Amino acid sequence: MNAWLSKAAALLALVIGAMAVFAGGKVLLGQLPDYYVISWLPVYNFTLGLISALVTALLIWRSHRYALPAALATLISHSAVMALLLTAYRDVVAPDSLVAMTLRISVWAVISVLLWVQAHGGKARLLARGL
Image (tube, rainbow, N blue to C red; front, side, top):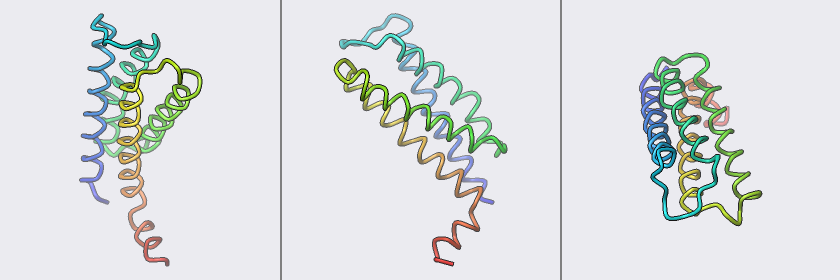
């Protein structure tokens, strides 16, 4: 098992979670950007950022059996919110919010792949060889 994969994934989770806490926290503390803010989005970003940085990153660091499910749940949550932003809020969502959510989805996809490779390393190598 490659322990460095889980450490790298945990650090990514910590950083992307901290970024969400910082971005959402600024808005929640009254430092509004110069564009329209969807009222629930900073709360979502702050809350999921805290969970990502404090819970999921720790699960990943410890290679806990719930690390991959937690990462996938985070990825699915961000993807669902992105779908909601692109459909129900497409006329009012700020481009900065879409960029931030795209970054989060991309990072959580990388984290999920790293964890999957760690969990299924031998099987993945056989599949890659076509065996």
